[in-house]
Image (cartoon, rainbow, N blue to C red; front, side, top):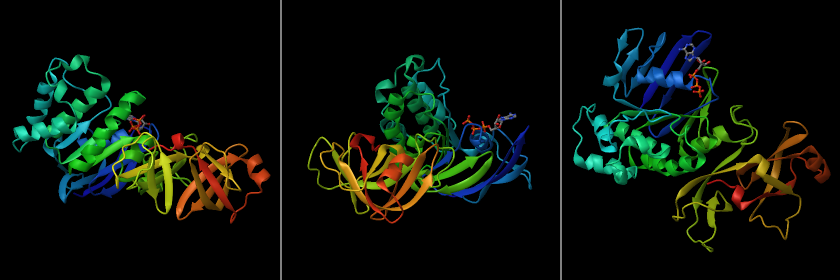
Length: 357
Ligand SMILES: Nc1ncnc2c1ncn2[C@@H]1O[C@H](COP(=O)(O)OP(=O)(O)OP(=O)(O)O)[C@@H](O)[C@H]1O
């Protein structure tokens, strides 16, 4: 699948001017509130007609303002899932799911329904009225309904934004299954670093109606140089890792990233399983000698490659740890006290519980 988009559109004082191509997997549209992500999704869904531009899917023109080609929304076969599930409150879960099927050109068999119900873990909910489902359950049903319409492309606009952290954590594994077990390409709008780290194959950074950068999650969400849309608290590093084949202690999980070993908690432990770890720069300490008698399990050797002032009296210290980049944010006082400088070997200390899988 290849989606080619080039659109320009003015909304009063705001102007959107974005071009990108993407193929398959989950492409995250990441940016601050008001950067234009929803407007772009609405253009793709056919809810807004842009002033100029085109949208092509696998070479098929969905929209082209030059030739005045406009495929109406229901003929695009683009599924949509919004922040709030927009289910029909008077229908049961099963009826809501089957409603999606009516819009499918290709017949949907019982097997498809079972597969989607299983994928999203909604079998126990089928007979329930939608009115008293939890927010997380509603979103899973909304995703199921969108999938049953057999979309060629799924547009998801902050599907987890209205949920609390516990509900978000409950849905993320289902979204990963959706990515890994179906071949439906997904455009996923979010300003959550956690969601984008966990889900995105590719990230498009949107600022003020423009595409400012694009790349892998680890390229786009890691210091130095990650987007201004990432809060200071969250700024850090995304590391690609795999669960190690042998696990010496059932209480923690050993993962390998490049030549490094990390220990973490609270994740599945299928040997060889790929993971993305995220560590905030503010959660990394530096030591000039290997520390002893410390509870932190992750003590990583590295060499300082750069130092950038960051905020008031703080420094972002970039490290090369056997080819893996890490950034630690420390006070200028600590940097002076330890005499830190580029080229110096140091030990990065990361608490096990501060490493998000
Ligand atoms: N119909 C409209 N008329 C005028 N301005 C609009 C209209 N719709 C959106 N805007 C403006 O366009 C800009 C982009 O809005 P949009 O909803 O696309 O951003 P967003 O990145 O999705 O934000 P959020 O994350 O808060 O949903 C905002 O400044 C918004 O006020």
